[in-house]
Image (tube, rainbow, N blue to C red; front, side):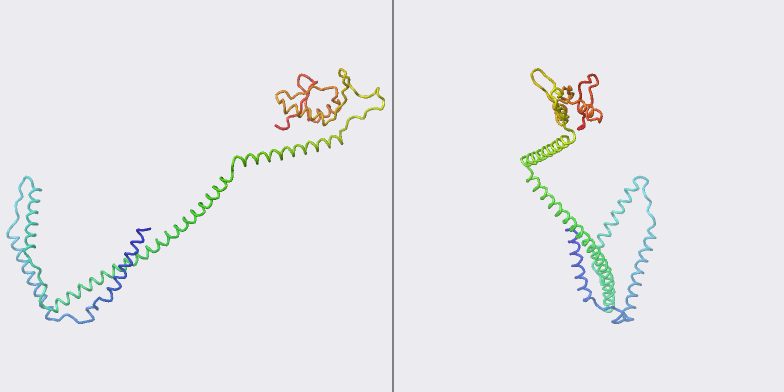
Length: 291
């Protein structure tokens, strides 16, 4: 971007200079006057004299003939001759003084005006080229500026997002994470208690204990030592099976006790809630629904 700015400034300065120089150029030579006939004749005469001198030099060179080159070291000989020729030409230029084309003022004025016209055309071409280059640089500058603005917007958005992530990361701590996990665990335990309570109420309403007979001799009781063990509800049977599979998953089977009412055992076996031990039919386990 800095290099383009420098080129743009230089082109603008050159354009301003050329526009100022354009007003100072002399008018077209064809609009002033034509070269006088005497000046034209004088210039042609000088050209004729110079042409005659060139013909004399050419004839002298032709009379000198060609020089025979040595058989050995031809390239070295040619280089030496070239050095001599250049040295002689250098001496001639050193001795020569600048000559005026002509002493005629009309000839000098016409030549000067022609030279100014040539310079004017060349400077106009340079100005046109500089203006075209300046226009291209302006387009490139606008394009680069738009790209820079887009990149700056992207940087601002990324910086803002980075600050947000830093704030979120700073607010997040181990204590906060532990508190969130603890709250989730409490919520899960409460939900578990609600489910168990709802299950107990459902089982108590729809699967009560068998009604005991009014005759004490017909009551379903099993003597175990000195203690009398009565039948337990389906809810209690399921709790025993659930606790067994959760506490000892390697040995989830429970022995069918006397206080397990047989119709309830047959029902949970028939509906796939529990299953018997493959080798001991007196032991059952809860189906592993949690897996």
